[in-house]
Image (cartoon, rainbow, N blue to C red; front, side, top):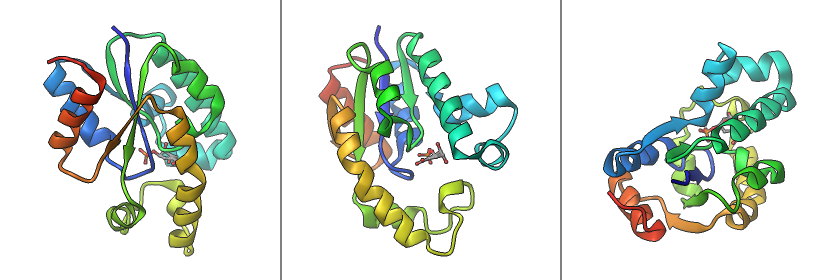
Length: 169
Ligand code: S3P
């Protein structure tokens, strides 16, 4: 049984929707960031601080390779993961990649008070978020086998993914 990999920008709901999808399909859920944190014994923010973004990306790639070697999972990827070709290659063809498409204004609202994501802890956060969003959108679209709108409730979105990917309960 292939994995379902959710991708999309920070705050698009990959983890919440993924948990709902796992519950509805009886599959196991893995949050890629939490997986990396457990492996490293550090939070994502600490990994960024200690090893820089490149150090985080290498660990993220390793996590992609390991998770792609497993079966039947619902995987919530990190917001940057599937914007890198080397990570897309790891999943493409075997697993189903789903892009959760949520407009920038909704994302900005959801991330307004975020203190957890290292890329957003800066005074020009809104500008950085907009530029990153616009830059990444084509990568998510290119990576995805299926695109699903993600601004509804997590449960509705989970059902939309089940329909779009043909996975059964
Ligand atoms: C990142 C998104 C984060 C996390 C890290 C980098 C990104 O995951 O992997 O902070 O580059 O967009 P979420 O999408 O779960 O916030």
